[in-house]
Length: 265
Image (cartoon, rainbow, N blue to C red; front, side, top):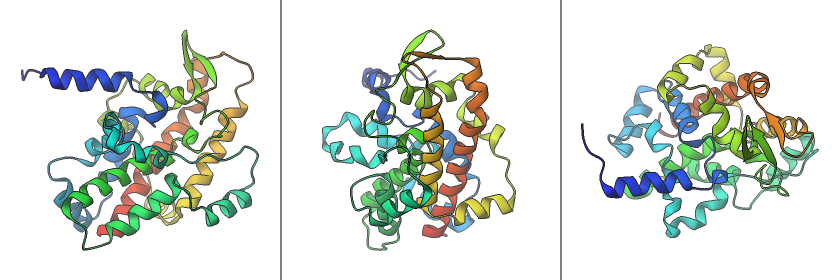
């Protein structure tokens, strides 16, 4: 067996201690989305994607944008991972906000990266960085609490009990729920990746603003189901939200594939 270097151990230790608000879907969720996306790329898109990524799969590249938070040089990317919206907004209000949105957030940066990656003059190192970021941010926007409320930092200030563990609500949606299923990312992707062509076409034709609004709707439900401080979430919570989580992971993968096919296919 190949040994792990001291440097690799330090990296692993650092990642395990990173703030949970910075890890939408955690390592596992992002890789599930990447694995699903890979299965729906056109031949041309897959060829172009792997000209950029080389031997790094989409699933493995999906975590880069979280891992590089160890480097202060990338601090400027912090706000790229989420968008904050006040509670109680209608669909029309959300879309009206997004039409005028010019701040740095996950919505504006997904649109920026799509445009940038179509530029044939990009340097290879820029292509690698932008593609890794796009893969990650599409995953982020499908985690409902990355479209959460500014007052509590997307659920980071909402304390709950996950079984006996004291955690925040954002952490539940980043990692606790997905890890509770006890599947590898390849097993998880295989378990939920069942779609019709009609479904895929419908999801992929929806604009990014619709992705945001759908996550916002789920975030509103998630907030609404927390009635008391330190509310206990356990098997029933998993039962109640498993379908929503699976649907968001699946849509994230299908939509990521559609986006990459438009850019490269």
